[in-house]
Amino acid sequence: MQARMTGLPEIAPDAYKALLGLEGALAKSSVPKSTLELVRLRASQINGCGFCADMHAYDAKKAGETDERLWSVATWRESPYFTDEERAALALTEAATRIADNPAGVPDDVWDEAADVYDEQSLLSLIMCIAAINAWNRINVTTRQIAGSMRA
Image (cartoon, rainbow, N blue to C red; front, side):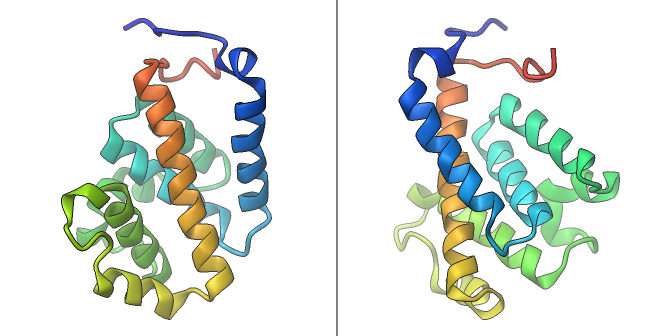
């Protein structure tokens, strides 16, 4: 596989700065970093973004995430490794990432579960994280960015 474009931050520096600014705001949110990384990993898996799945699995591992939890993100419903808060975040991630697959958008039960365990500020941060990773996925899948190339 070969990237269709390279040097994306140099080609569109203002756009990249804007997305990175959102990431900086998310880093200051009350949502645990581990939850944000799990959300990023799950959305990237759904979207088939090898670049982002690799990056966020690596970042999560660097931040202390266990192998068992990383291996189980794709099967989180059947796994005993996740908290109620993380399960709500992963369900919301899947629903918002696959929004076109459901005529109702994000189902009420998924929303209600997330709203039950997150306050409004944290919930909006979670939604922003889901939106941001979906944007990154679309940029990187479209331009065929190579998994692991950030560490090369």
